[in-house]
View 1 (tube, helix red, strand yellow):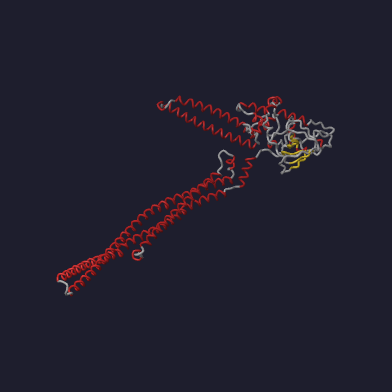
View 2 (cartoon, one colour):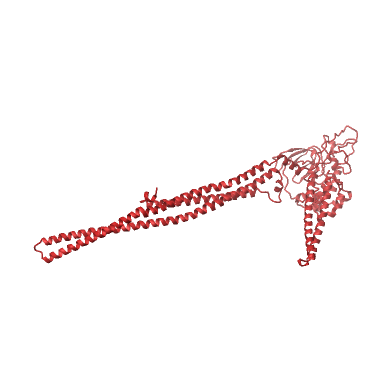
Amino acid sequence: MSWGTELWDQFDNLEKHTQWGIDVLEKYIKFVKERTEIEISYAKQLRNLSKKYQPKKNSKEEEEYKYTSCKAFLATLNEMNDYAGQHEVISENMTSQITAELARFVQELKQERKSHFHDGRKAQQYIETFWKQLEASKRRFERDCKEADRAQQYFEKMDADINVTKADVEKARQQAQIRHQMAEDSKAEYSSILQKFNHDQREHYHTHIPNIFQKIQEMEERRIVRIGECMKTYAEVDRQVIPIIGKCLDGITKAAESIDQKNDSLLVIEAFKSGFEPPGDIDFEDFTQPMKRTVSESSLSNSRWDGKSEPKPGSKSKGKLWPFIKKNKPPPPPPASASPSAVPNGPQSPKQQKEPLSHRFNEFMISKPKIHCFRSLKRGGGGPEDFSNLPPEQRRKKLQQKVDELNKEIQKEMDQRDALTKMKDVYIKNPQMGDAASVDHKLTELGQNMEKLQLEAQKFEGWLAEVEGRLPVRTEQSRRQSGMYDTQNTSAVNNCAQDRESSPDGSYTEEPSQESEMKVPVTEFDDEFDDEEPLPTIGTCKALYTFEGQNEGTISVMEGEMLYVIEEDKGDGWTRIRRNEDEEGYVPTSYVEVYLDKNAKGAMTYI
């Protein structure tokens, strides 16, 4: 079927239809363009989402990604990045293969359509102009015929009239002949124009217009084929990235399957294992025997209270709760007893000779600079250089990590030294390449750096050997003698932490002569600690026994007195209480009966 033969008289409708076809193309181009914008926006949002949940460098989050579940999550984030990249590929391919190509095709189509319809209008105008000429020739022929007929009738009338002169009759005859001749000429002209018009009209409707309409039909069919091809390309662009997207999803699935809960549990043990053993059993204290009461060497009191007593060789408990103390508090009290005789102010056994509790507190408080520790907690001071504030297992890991870092730095310096040595040899053999003396300064500097790093590594290796049991445990005296490796500007906070945590068993081995070295003027304890906001009450407590808090950080209580709890026992045997806004401190947990109230956060009312 051809538009030229079937639609020969639908020039205007074809013009409208072809314009509609071009509008459809432009609409499809707009659709694809908006799809590419959506893909770009989606890819950008996916990348931002992946970046948002990536672990920050040199942060605590980065350390958490050693667990398999976190590694799987990190792999998921990386796969999401690749997934976003495929959506960017979709956008790029649709833009280059569909949008750009169709836009160029539409411009060509508009130019071709304009040319075809221009030729059609030109042919239409020609046939219309010729038709007007034919009509004019026809009207002229008709007019001349009527004029000739009237002239002939007038001649016949004059010829029949006997009163008319012969001259008038001759004049009328000549006029009739002229009119007849004009009519004949008009007839011949009309006949000629009519024949030519019929010929041109046949050419117009059977040749010119069919050819033009055929070209318009072919143009329209090319448009239809092209939009179909673009729709196939639209699908193919998506289909091409499906395998890669599938690989991304497979990667996420593989990462999920790689999660090992047992391995994560082992990592938790490795991260938080202290290396201490649990406390042993507490021996039964028989107060019916007329002999001096003995406390089990496995209890926490021996290692904290009596610095002169030696633990039994077979004892497994050496103050294991000491590493968990988070605040600088007085030493833990003796274990709770059902009898008030265990209390310094309570009735004593007749034959029992026990050093007053206040004396033990005095000894402890004199030997330890408590003010420094409070200030270090307040200001968040760093730990000691030898990590002695950490439990043994964690300390060993930190020391091993430090030794490995120092060895890497030493190896790096050695590599630089070897490279400079080779360069110096080349300069010596070929002086024109450079001055060998110019390398000496750098070699000297590298040698000094290596010496410092080696000394530092030896220091940490010594501490590591001590932790691993290859060397005897050093006392505070021997630790101070190793100060040749320490930096000269060690802060008082670190010194305090070293003193408090130096012995793994929680005992104190400093000599009496060191007490003067560790004393700190009270004036150095500034108002920073006092300016803290008061802790909220978390419950109440009742004093079971009378306690005289004669040392800094403690508070005196009377038997039966009701007070407010602001910090419960953290495992070190002390509870922090408050009497009023200005009186608060620590008391032995065994001396009070605690009633915790988790909802008590407001201001307290005094009893």
